[in-house]
Image 1 (cartoon, rainbow, N blue to C red):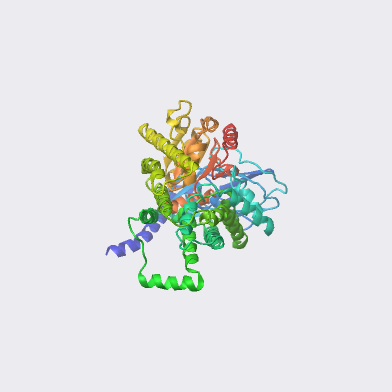
Image 2 (cartoon, rainbow, N blue to C red; image 1 turned 90 degrees about the vertical axis):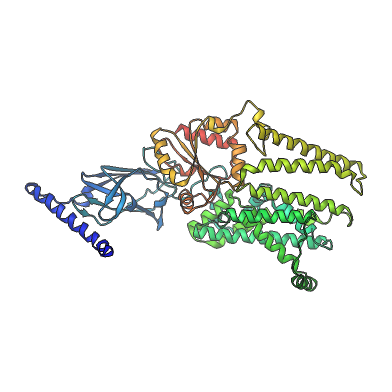
Length: 603
């Protein structure tokens, strides 16, 4: 019975709507009303200059436009998702149900960088309260012949549109996108290889150094220089190919596999693996494969010498996917290019060159890992213990992504234990005979003891920090939050906060961050604490958008603002216009970043 009632309920509502509309018409028979023509009901005024376009709809009384029916297309490329629309009025519509509409007037102001001789196809749809809904209205607008790069101009409730992913500031992903677009393959490979080499000493790559070194040093018998190089090359090739394939998939699908793999369960598994490896280095446990599998691998290694290469390649793939997920300008530029053009080959080649550039230090370290060590002996136990501690540090580094509050206490404790053990190393058998060796060990122990004490001090002062543990003792610096309005929110809270900030006439900085993002911590520790940056941020509303969960809403919001992954900084001016050409990807230079903030605040 209830199912039949639910089936006829929509028909009943339509009938009631018809009778009510008829009744209203009968009451007004003396002045019978007819719906206006679409161009009268929704009068559209267009104002176009060299670098901007203003669209203003004057909406007649008792008429409204649907917010979700607006669509803008330039050269078959839908740019509607780049719009940050003004707040609309909620409405229970008889045709579309719960929706949002505009009454009286709708105004949009759009930046037009690099769109000479283009045609904008505009689609919109509205209804009359009297019971008539218009079909979608389509208008073609010829954009100006000559344009110049420009910022979105200010108008309350308006938006700038990023029609070409123009100039990602500071780390300039747009520059890398342009290199890909030029399709000079030789220059492309060189540029991205050098960019990768520049990233080699960043948190993107450094955690892989002890992993590769541990793999090569652990091989018995001691590998030759040639084999060490080939094993290192296998690791780097696996890493570079993974970067390329994952990047192409991310660019074409809009989903970043590296970010998706930062799930707490996967991170926890990696932490456990590093702990197991550390325990094996300390001889607490013995990791041994089943005898049958071990014999088979031994046969393969004797016949083809391929067993080690396969294992190293697998570790290279895992390292690229889980251990070192970084979003830098070259990566962002390649993904934007692939997403815009659908060309996976050029973008994939750039990403492969990027990965090979990042692997240069790994090749050097891996090749030399087994060559500068003396012959086998008791000293090898010390090397094992060193790698055991490195595995523990890597476990803490991974744990920081899901349990950041434990990072500093764990590092402080582990460093203190390691320093105390270092003081005992020269007395171990066989003892270190050379005076320089003793000085190095004692000096390293002293440094580690001092660092661990500094970490404990920062914990006691309530401002634990790995990178600047003694900073709380300085009276000259304060947190960014003390000089600007800062809130931490989820993605679904952004629209309301942007409206509030525009009402307060404050420029806005959206800071996309995640707990597992290493570069985000670098941004917080070194960029946001800089005096010039803190001063420039005084007038901003800083909104930290937590995308740790990488939910569907998080991904949608990042795609909307062309953010490949955290860290990413998106700016809005005092009137709420999205400054698409000022987006920052990665970690910017502090002086240039402070200048950008000053420029935005002055608009």
